[in-house]
Length: 325
Ligand SMILES: Nc1ncnc2c1ncn2[C@@H]1O[C@H](COP(=O)(O)OP(=O)(O)O)[C@@H](O)[C@H]1O
Ligand SMILES: [Mg+2]
Image (cartoon, rainbow, N blue to C red; front, top):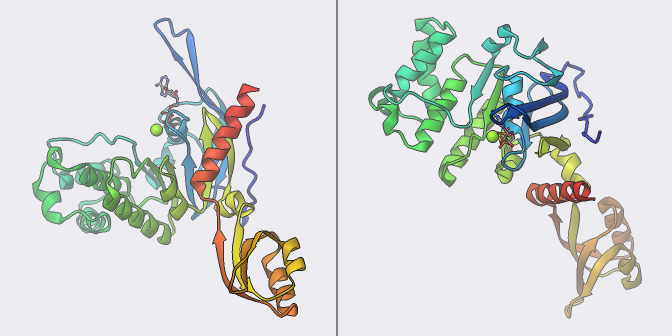
């Protein structure tokens, strides 16, 4: 078995908010239900309190399947999981979680406000609390009260629907929020605003689990990510763990001993004005100290870090390569 267990140490010695162990889902399809689709292969991961966790993967990777398993919408074929310490599907947990589905089915003939009242009713939130919370949520998601009260949702744009969907996901003031592709179908401004909403949830201390293939957004929001490909969790960790070892510095400086510089900087080029530049191979602090001893100085230094996108593509290619071997 080559599934990757998520081995992140728990920084604050608290039990994980989301825990899965060898979770697997096989769908049976075809007229006689005799064909199998393995949508999730033995997935083990943990998410801790207050983390923003991004599950990345191309279409069909199994992201929605994992979310539905966690939410108890579908049952695993094998393996187990805990959500807020309770087994998957436990009803008492539902009060403490929020969910924005991938394609939220909203009621065309309700206004946004009526829809939120409906959602609040399902959680048995008292009218008094609803009257306070609904305007607060509309403010948070950036939907005007006039649109929410007067317009039917069939007249909402995709961005407006996503905002109502988000407000619905937060109606019960959940501790843990699941968002399935919250940015999909939004224009750049809509994506930016959705990111701001997620960041404000994060600063309010919510734990956020979100699925996405919009890598750059994940990079800007998430503390931790996992990459799923064809049902297989291929890596997971903090962004620093995943990308950190690939960081390099591009340095520009002047002075120092050319022979020594050659051993510490690759692609070293000397310019006509006596300056030099290249890629630092050494520890940054060591290099600064030795350069100073050689009488040289740094003019500019830029971190050229590998983007999550590059890392993602590299990992998927590696996975494809090992499957083809
Ligand atoms: N109800 C289902 N019946 C059969 N196959 C399914 C069902 N739901 C999803 N799948 C299959 O499982 C795989 C993963 O799907 P999904 O979890 O929706 O991926 P993602 O959300 O990453 O795009 C796909 O191959 C998809 O066709
Ligand atoms: Mg999906």
